[in-house]
Amino acid sequence: MAKGESRTFGILGVVKRKSTTIFKHTDTKVTVAVEYIRTHATGGIGVGDVVKQMGCSRRTAEMRFASLTGHTIQAEIRNVRMANAFALLRNPRQSIDGIAHLCGYDSDSTLRYAFKAKTGVSMREWRRQNGLRSNLIHS
Image 1 (cartoon, rainbow, N blue to C red):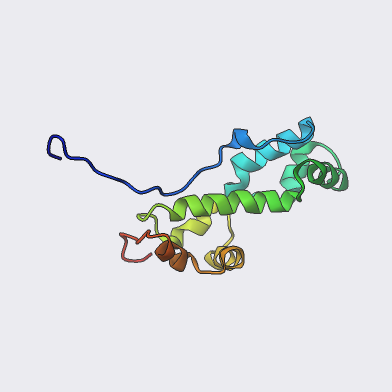
Image 2 (tube, rainbow, N blue to C red):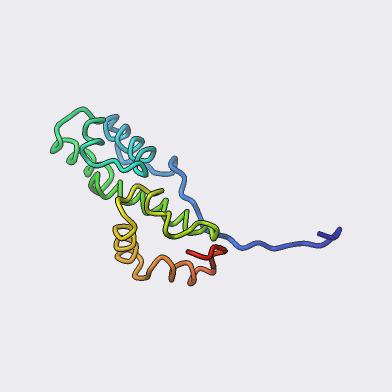
């Protein structure tokens, strides 16, 4: 780059920080559950794993979690996985075929279905709409 020359780069997206989630009240078991989900959702955990971390019955865990977050434990797991999928899709060098595994989904088709249900478009189309053409041959 020549001296005095400037470059402009576009924004790939806004990342919501974990610390910005604010609960109406505090519940240490729910806080533990949310942190566990955020650090392990991409590893393929399920609701049972989260309930075990909370140390109470499944019904109690679900009720406490929903009362503070406004959604179920499973919805939180899906939200974290989907947020990770969006982050990976913003990287044009990341192959679409590898994203499901990196996000904790059992298969590519499971992620593709969930993604289309959430956005109304395929992952490939979402990339095109957001100006993120892949640099890979198989994306």
